[in-house]
Image: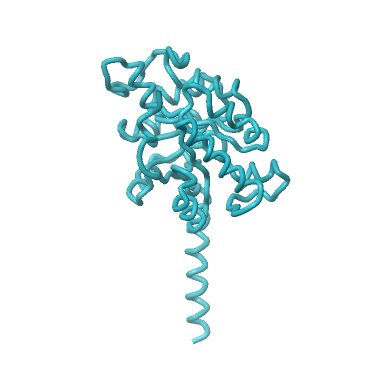
Length: 256
């Protein structure tokens, strides 16, 4: 059983690391499909993330959260607050993928506890079945070991998607920690993961911070979704552009 959320279209999400209720709204208005609330990196704590999730409409299938581990306690809180996808980092084995599935899916697929705290979160004759369809279980592959064991991870029953962390993946191959690789082992890994995910009916996503690289990945059909940018990086860039524009204007006036 695969979730309905990832069935259509290429989707564009943004990583949110700041405890702000406004960022999901601004992202949606700007044209993003959703957010990944990042509890692994950044300033988001569990309580803040749960509050933000409750502010996002329940029908947004791309209200996702990235956790620091497969700890079921944190995952359960996020899901009960309305997270429609859980991304777990550095998955390197089938056992870790199974633990993620167990924490995110109700019986008979997983072992998620039945304790809904947000009314009307899943609609259907069977709350458990509707919940399993509504929640995307996403394993992040970002190491050489993860790539080598990719098929055993991807074929885990109940897993919906693979998310590539290209910078960490590059570091694991002894390369600089950047994400926009057009050749070499990172590119080979992307192609390999695409072949495996298509073979097993699982979707594939990646992080990217560059427009041209993102467009090429989507145009080549290598991924189904991209997390395009991080709020802190985008804010830093906007602040830098703003002050540099002012400095240029002042310099021009001083020369005239």
